[in-house]
Image (cartoon, rainbow, N blue to C red; front, side, top):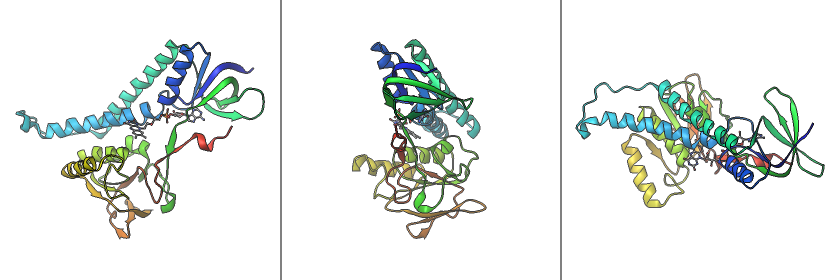
Length: 290
Ligand SMILES: Cc1cc2nc3c(=O)[nH]c(=O)nc-3n(C[C@H](O)[C@H](O)[C@H](O)COP(=O)(O)OP(=O)(O)OC[C@H]3O[C@@H](n4cnc5c(N)ncnc54)[C@H](O)[C@@H]3O)c2cc1C
């Protein structure tokens, strides 16, 4: 039997769940489909957990400079697993918050992966549930809020493998703690991860195609940020480009703007502008058709 709604929202990131709440507040019978975790990338794998990681990095840095504040903290250590666990815990609480909001606003949460079926008077949404079975839904209005996905490095001929070559998800829950890391792209996401790993002693190099870091910010901000990050121990290469990446037995060999600079990198985290591509995350809705 097909379940009907006034509105079905596909994707429960900040775009989707807020829209669903508003639709329900306006008196529309609303369903929201999510294949992963409520709250989408931002709450589970993006904005929020990265800030939790950065907070740990900040506390660690401050503790190392405690004497500057008239404090004495000896033997400051860190536990990578505990740092990541805290970040996952913060994300988990956010997801629970969205669950609560859905319930409070009487929105039906449909767990599974949605696809659209052509034909018929109203759009039909088929949701493959966690049990692998398809369930049909229809709605007068359909909202696609499916977000974006990580872009790999086709020009360099290498895909993220979750071990040596990471996307943002791997960088957030690292399979092992690297001794060195190359980060491609110095936008907000790349710089956040670079700064996080550098704070915990990972030899981190940022490769940026353009002539300054944080290129969407004002030039003064870029110049100030570069100095600051270098002081924190980041190596920053601007106007450079990743030509190729090769997984080796012990790490990843990167050819950067014709020079071999990444021979000793344990892993590579890819932010944006990998190879010749300027965009880091592709919109998902473009590759899904109605
Ligand atoms: C590491 C990182 C850090 C970031 N930090 C910040 C920050 O500090 N500040 C900021 O403003 N932005 C930040 N962003 C960007 C922010 O996460 C996105 O802008 C935001 O998540 C976009 O929201 P959205 O609702 O469009 O999509 P998303 O949050 O991507 O949510 C889309 C949801 O749709 C679901 N979905 C997709 N297809 C289907 C399907 N077929 N069926 C069912 N469900 C589906 C996905 O599982 C996902 O949960 C960051 C991103 C990353 C990766």
